[in-house]
Amino acid sequence: MTDAMIASYLDRRLSASERERFESHLAECGECREAVVDSEKLLKRVRPRRGMKTLIALSVAAIVLVGVRLEVIPRNPRIVPETRATTPVTGALGVYGPIGEVSGRALRFVWSPIVGAVSYRLVVTDASSRPVWSTTSPDTVVALPAKVGLRAGERYFWIVDALASNGITHSTGVREFRVGE
Image (cartoon, rainbow, N blue to C red; front, top):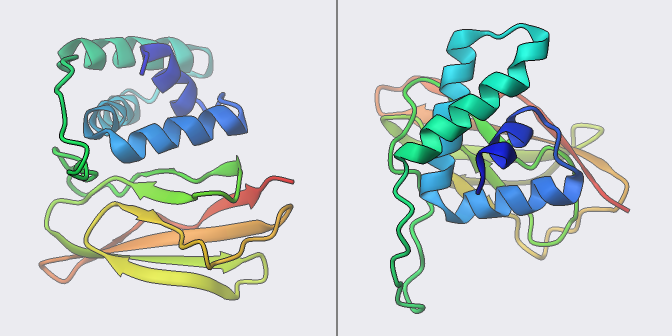
């Protein structure tokens, strides 16, 4: 993934299909998730002026990618790749997706980990706040089961709460996505 893609993702300038491909990649690649988290952290500290946000995001992404090893390691196809980020962010429960317009096929919910989290509770609701589906997981990537039917053109909301080992909860806040026609 390029520094320009990370910057465009963080600035929400990707099309719905580009965002979906990007988030699918994030769901499978811990190094890229870590690069995005590092870029987000730096952007939050800097608090750029309006016109500078893209430039700073590109610069941060480039710096982070230089630090990421770009080695290709052969994998055994029978082994499922690790989907949990290797370096969690303390105290910040970030969201990778879905956000915006998405296809209803193979939908994955992806968020950043919290140090000390015991489990994560994901709840998906329709536009009238009726629960559509919920689950609890120790992981930061959850696939929506095929049996859960989302209607094209409809808006949905989702939230993740992390329960830490000390009893404190952290939340992503409510996020919205829409299933494309």
